[in-house]
Length: 167
Image 1: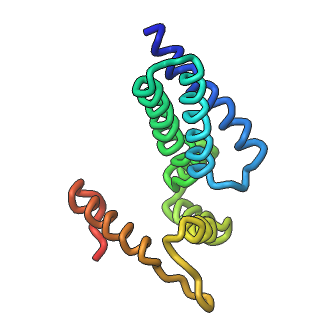
Image 2: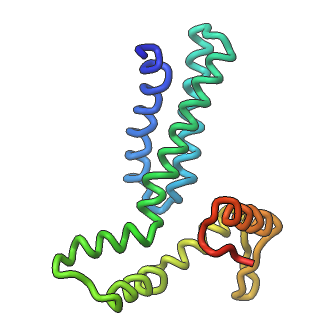
């Protein structure tokens, strides 16, 4: 357990502190991509440090990969979800409304988030940045990568009995 603390937990703690600092310095970046880039940098630094200490390459690589995957899982499940999830925003609105909300007020929150507060625009920018879609004369279309991603999403919807699969 003590070795695990040194080889995985310490680099992950460094990642967390650096990620918090990065997000406060650059709030305009995409959370997931910033986290992946920083996680990669921390894992690479961890690997190089282990090699300088003459740790076996296989062990150094395994530890660095575990740190990267832990950072990725954290970024994907916590800050990305909190940033992007309509459900999180709805719960926050309800917490700020102890008298309760009508369905119409909840519906308005959805409209306000995706239209008035730029929720749709944010997602269009993210998808353009990841090359899953492109804009041409004011119309958005999927790239080849976007079509592959759509197929993968559809397969996951069917496999895991998610929301009604898109056709």
